Amino acid sequence: MDAFTLLPPVMAILVAVVARNVYAALIVALFLSEALIGFGTPGGFFLFDGLVGTVDRSVAVFESSYNTQILLFCLLIGALIAFMRESGGVAAMAQALIRSGLAGSRRRAELAVAGTGTVIFIETNVSLLSAGVLGRPLYDAHGLSRERLAYIIDSTSAPISVLLLLNGWGAYALSLVGEYDFANPLNVVMGSVPWNFYALLTVTGVYLTAITGRVFGPMAKADARVAGGIEEAGPAPTRPRYMWLPLVIMIVSALSFMTITGNGNITDGDGARSILWAITLAVVVAGTMLWLDRLFTTRDLQEKAFQGIGEMVPLVTVLLLSIALGSSLRALGTGEFVAGVAAGNLPAFTVPMILFAAAALTSFMTGTSWGTYGILVPIAMPLAIALGIPPSLALAAVLGGGVFGDHCSPISDTSLIASVAAGSEHLSHVRTQLPYALVAAGIAGVMYLVAGIVAG
Figure 1 (cartoon, rainbow, N blue to C red):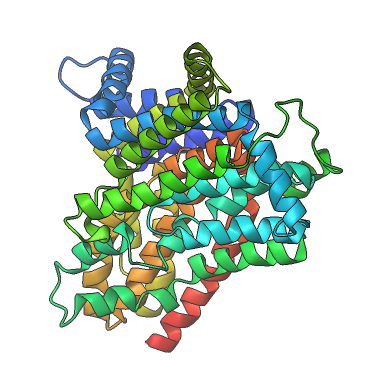
Figure 2: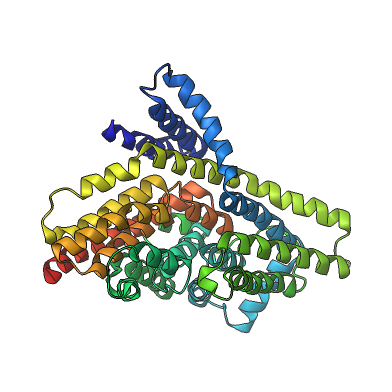
């Protein structure tokens, strides 16, 4: 049965690639996973178990307040974007940035977006939304594709968060490492940063892309489709504050709410609750400002809010199915099987590379980095201790591998939110970003092999 646990994620990827239909891919994978869970149960029936399990697992997503908050957050993003766009604020902001020279060229526009994604490292979703909404009009004006924007913001969210560990990522890693008898677990976690080759290579790739302007593979084809700029019919420019003020309020309030919910410690804050409160406050402020300026009536605001929410429903549906599939795969034991294969009788010098590959494969197939960490860190730490491998090196291999899937798996919530924030078709974002991720992963794998030899 163990090998069959790989069937659902493999089918999800195959259906997504062949049919180019992410809904079908997720539903097929979820059905197979639930059917396999029920297989062999006394009185069970394969097809019935798969069908009923698919429904029940999808409904169970809402049993988690975290999941519900993230789904509501994504819906409200639509309302906020609609207010900023339909008011003419987005067009005015882009016009102001280009005229000021801050984003007057392709290079400056991309560096501005990459810099935004880098600076906001406390919470990945806030980073994605802020950089994505800011980048949309800039990329359109300079003839850069939305897929390219999605790549830039996706590759400066999770990769940056796992390098600048003064956030929830660092707190989570510390909680996992703290279970072992290290003299100073914090040193183990912070010591993983220079060993985190995948994240370092990914961020380097982003800035090289921004500085040189060069892209390759499917990304080059996506850019070629929009060469010369995008002229979208839309509201005429009005006031830049209709865009920047709600964004600033969202960012500042999200960080403030994380500090409050963390009892003064931002790294202990409730990220999902904080960003939901923050996006709600930003929507209220944006709507009130537009009403006071008599740009929209209350009926106009209502219609535009629901229009924006409606635009998000397809992607929120994908996110819902992705969360359900991730939960089902954990129950099926897919991650444990991959981890178990990696934890066999291995030469010590290959362990960092194997841990990285196992984490990358697990996170790509399950769509979760933190879930991957929960599975593999308890395997990596005892292995490092037993084989004399630096614990920070083993931890970095798992953290970096987890980021690989988190920001490029078609069923990852992070890659989905990146598509939403950039306004890119989701599977197109996955296809164009994957070559970059694979190149970085390939180089990182070789570096982990060399590091294992040197450290051994």
